[in-house]
Amino acid sequence: MLREAGLEDITVTDGRWLVPDVNAINELFDIYGNSGLFEVFDTLSGVAANNRSVNEKDFGYYLQGDFSVELGSVPVNGNIGIRHVRTELTSDGSSFVGGVPVPTRVEHEYSDTLPSMNLVAELTPDFLVRVSAAKVMARPNLGFLNPGATVTVSGGARTVTTGNPKLDPFRASTVDLNLEWYFAEGSLLGLGVFYKDIDSYIQTSRETRPYNTSGLPDSLLDGTGAVPTDEFDFTQPLNTPGGDLLGYELNYQQQFKSLPGAFSNLGVQFSYTYVDSEIQYLSSSGAPSAKGPMVGLSENSYSGTLYYDDGRFSARVSTAYRDEYLTTIPGRNGNDVEGTEETMTVDASVAWNINDQWQVSLEGLNLTDEWNDQWVSSTGDRASVYTHTGRQYLLGVRYKF
Image (cartoon, rainbow, N blue to C red; front, top):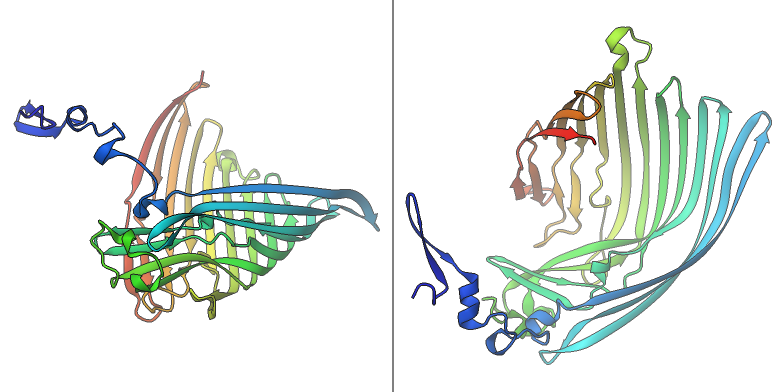
């Protein structure tokens, strides 16, 4: 009887257990038969929004010229070019008329002409100045281009995610200046300054409101336990007017070849980045709502590594820090912003090459046991996510044939 019900009776040393037998369930109910109750089709309103496809066709051509000249006694190398690209998009999904899913196709096309210039001036054999300027673009994630909507209910979490097949790409004009001093073998001291005039930015808009204000059919809630008057978190990508981004970066690396004995195998790497940005964000209706820094971008961040490597034994310890950063502007439930607290992680590793074939290594990740602390509201600082993965230790043995 247990077998017919899709269960197996298993005896183990400390008791008896019942476990599902999928093969028996299939024999009894024909769950893979694609007929009757178990027929699979894509016209149900609850699943139609998840059936979508996006086709992208890209066409481009470019013209580039390289040159090498001397300005006085200073060699200058570089190139100037221009690229033209055309993007054609076809997004297929479902919209709903009277609660019935209707196949929907949205076509979108845009073109970009992208000039660029790169110059390198060799002031001395060890000191270089690099200048570059360009117009750039980055196409939106294909997942953003779905013309349909996905409704998800999981416990108290209720979300509606809609695409935007008319999205334009990220667009910006950029200028970079870099100074590089190679003051010793394997060593560098560098300073870089960068500016970006962002003409078009893709924002993920989040808004909490009752489901029945969305215009979506109530039938999408069938079987979820939710009702049309329940509040849902609505998420949709939007193009914004963009804004400005200005920053600089310091880089330092050195191998201490001049030190005596084993100390000559030491080395260090360090980088620091500062970024100031201001982006115009929109409400879900497309109206300007707030200005703030680019989401996901910390104002200050740095990383450093101290290492030893003599060819047989190597060891390194690294640290990485970033300021708190914003993740959503404006925030959900009427809050101004959402963000993530600052983090600092420390990793370390050692490796020993026993011979030309065998290597043993030990690696420790997140030794400071850093937490993922996400919050809502710049004034209330209410916890949204507070989790950690703990420290990780990896012991490895490698053999080369």
